Length: 329
Image (cartoon, rainbow, N blue to C red; front, side, top):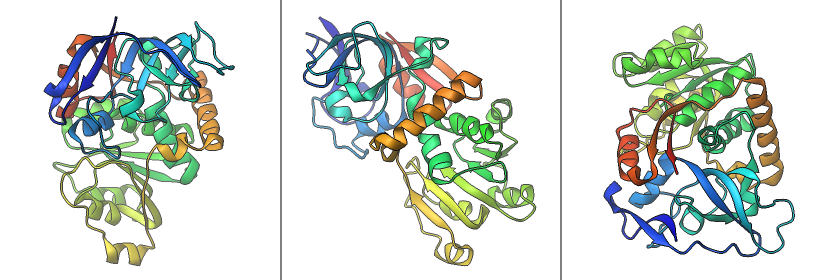
């Protein structure tokens, strides 16, 4: 038997159930993992709540990121073998292939080797965060050393990854966080400046830092009323990436600011990258090179045991983490 986490109704963390089931057998184009670690993501909380891009069909699996060793392969899988050390790339349906379990089956195209110098915990903390940042900042925004970028919710795993990705190409990084407690951490993570939004004027300070020019790129998972502040902080011709919906308030479109500055305000998800093989390969190579050089490195906030999945979800919901939350299996 194998442990598996599922939920039968949407709701709070308590809906998560740990069950013992026979391990699935991989079908055509699939592999099965013996999981060592699972990386948590905000998307899984939204999915569990029924507020995600994909609608759960109970009983539903969940989870995008896991690291482990392949212990079975399905028919027609030619490029992978039993014993390969891999981690999963979020590029599949969570409800069908969720990786919260000891032996999940996933599509063969959704696994990739990770560097030998990384632990299993770090291996479960690569693809979601670094590919999300790569896609917006490097693939689409073409960020360079001449640019400035504003990263909100900067202490999240994706926020920290975005700081590293932006610094790896020499951009000026302004990190935004709600409280003073995270300022030191974000400076140590590589941010050039940190704005504490509970006590400071976001747009005014961004404009001060950039000598009145505004920031070229904004990377925001919050949405809601802050979009108006982000537009005021942006440079003429700037681009604002909205990649999440942490705010439960409506997201107003800052029409006159956008018209006056010629702003682009763009919805963006990781799947734009992971579902395009050519862009995904560019992303993987960027990340591999960054991990090898040391410019990119997963930052782990805290680990939880598998049986403490409810506590781990509740901890993520508080928003206190600084880096990645990981489940050990």
